[in-house]
Image (tube, rainbow over all chains, first blue to last red; front, side, top):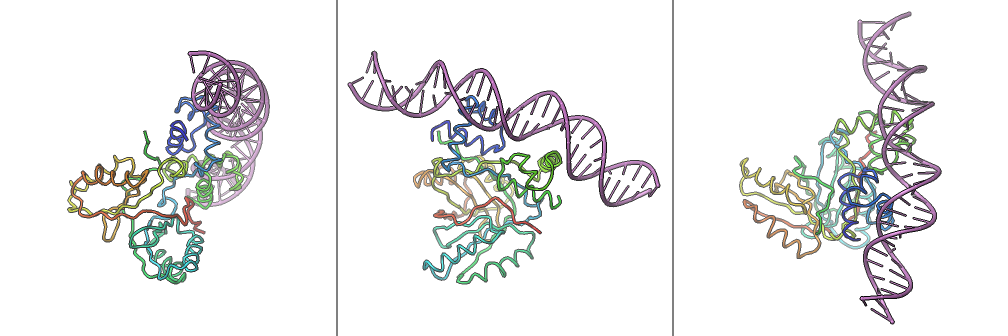
Length: 152
Length: 152
DNA sequence: CCTCGTTGGGCAGATTATTCCAATTTATAA
DNA sequence: TTATAAATTGGAATAATCTGCCCAACGAGG
């Protein structure tokens, strides 16, 4: 992972469907070594994949919620049970383990407040072992980028 | 935005570099109408763009932090000042306005704890007008997907 | 029943991806 | 510094893909 690889990564974070020729030009390489570097980054796992960034409201999921959850117990069984259940819920797009007062933070997208209530009552509560849930609705997004800072 | 558009969106969220031919096959269309739908979704803003999903640690940014910030005052001038300054900080990948006890939540990526301290002292504090900052480090990620739930 | 608008399908020229090999650069050790 | 080895690059040829254009099929509204 050298400076050129990082340059490639940032270009592909800005536009993941860039053609290899444009990418090569952007990073001052000819197409063949450029493509080889991209393939290496993919094979090594540095690039995990590519995805379309979609407007949730246009798709039909206008509500984004961050949900912070604390468990009653942290023994391995309960933790694994919780995590397995969380992974299986399609409305949960992200789930991170955090330091601090709460154990987990989820990013959830739903079609409305009723769908959110349904989500909490029928997807989260049935998991069991939950000590507390703290909900924060997103009401605006000041910044959202996939491009890492440049590290120079 | 019909069911076929949503099918296309989910396919492109799963793999944003899919060729149009494979996409067409995946959604049971021939390549030309499929491409036309994709272009329409892009033009309407439903698809905002495409990006590579990169492993932060491999790139050199192993630490992800969620930072929750409350402002001292919420008059328009102070809010705009804060938001403009936040947008200009490359380490801040996301900044959302939230309901609840805190005003903003940032997602920040840095190279280490020292870089995080530097970020808070030299990027956030100088903005001024901040009432409180609450930091949660990410220690693990249970789930992370770009694919929306299916809405059927 | 007709017409108009929308959507799907096929074709051809242009662009792009991909592979191989020679040449260059870079790193290492004497 | 020089020599050697390894890694990386660049170019050309081929295969795959994109993309714009045209026409056909379907449905809604008059």
